[in-house]
Length: 204
Image 1: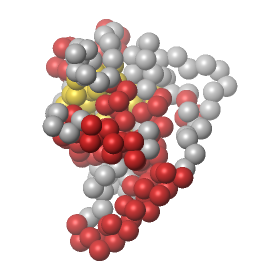
Image 2 (image 1 turned 90 degrees about the vertical axis):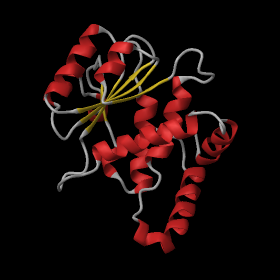
Image 3 (image 1 turned 60 degrees about the vertical axis):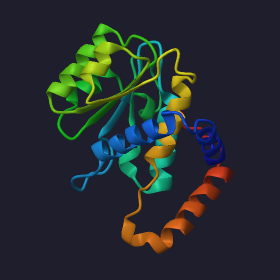
Image 4 (image 1 turned 180 degrees about the vertical axis):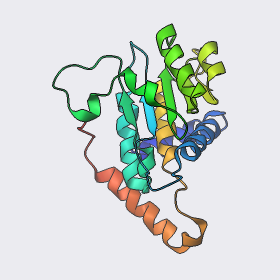
């Protein structure tokens, strides 16, 4: 979903909770992965459920990381099943969650029940010091485990995929320091032009 469609979607949703809620959640995501040392990438772990893999969100966050100059937003996609001979960025299994701890953020995307196995792994990561965020369909256990959660129940009027688009777009916003204000509009226009002319992501 390009910048123009995101803007139109926000206009349609004006007056509802969703533009503000997705921006708030995106701000929490940015804060949780903000670099605290020389390493800027590899600290955001994105994981779905056994039946739902958030590869589309992964691709959009990679794009936002590049366009906004925030490499820390580029996630490591953690998968329940990794097939032989897949490229490195698609070859990270659930064992990666066992190494998560302080300084890592685990973003769980779960339209339905996450499953006990995933909940246990995420709980262990939280206990080791990782920040846990959740985009979900309203699962109480996952929501209670997360430091911050954005839930999209069945009667919300939009689906979780749409909310993911809004969150990923908002995650790359407001990235430039205030003191760089004179360049900010130019940079945003340049970024918009890049988004409108860029081909769809092919890595995923």
